[in-house]
Length: 355
Image (cartoon, rainbow, N blue to C red; front, side, top):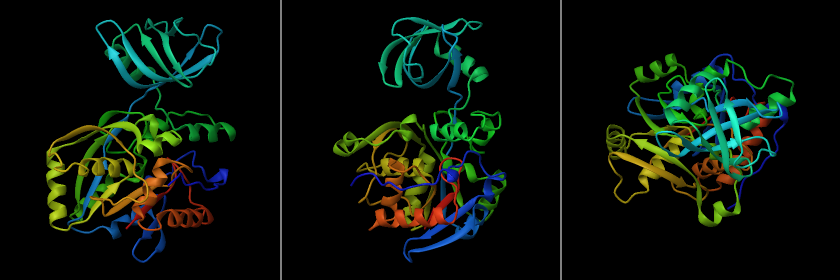
């Protein structure tokens, strides 16, 4: 199995969300009948029923992107991905760093007023390891004030090419789910962006059980697939937490043959990682490098809500796997239909419900 590719007209890359979150288009795919319906996201209530279990990823995107001015007065960008090590005076981070001419071991000033500087200790293309002269706490205070949410590169590229401003204050609200609770993610669990608080209340009023887990979405979600991913059958690692109340409820749901619906590929990856254990832990904390691609038999999910994904991405392979036998052909046909119907793609785009 290799990556799935398709052609997408540039105007279908969504650079802004719909004015109302739950008014985006919803493509409903019925697997057993091989049938497509075209709806709006607020219609999703009609596909849910009492005793269903709806699982969200309540990860909150942290403001990890900062622009700074280098010695030559050129504007540079740094995105803090993950902490590597720290002590009482400094911290070392894995980052995305623009500026090919920036030199290793040379000190650079990130913020003169906050007295924060760094030096590059290792360079791996756009990825770098940097050592800061401040603690984790001080950096987090700085980011809370000066940081921007790290929007996906394809949104920034599309905005730039169409002459739009790359960042707006509205993104701080738009690129965050209404139920986001636990900070740390470098990207939003975008299938959840379509829910409003009112829609969630209406769904719960139907008797649907609502659950939250945490997968710390990493920048690797945007990384292109490599031959190594397929030979090792692994992806980038992401941290997962599922508490015992949720795992106990889901175990009982499977015993009772109640439907479990995942909001997004991050929920799918989390639950399948949990279910991969011979005896799934009740209180679950781990990192996962699980790579789901056809053929794969899902053990927990009965239905899934997801966005329209990048050509060649691991997320597209996961969705194809969820479609079952012939999933690659089916996802290509579904995406062709979505393009014909002018669905908007990617993080700020429209949604898909797979039943």
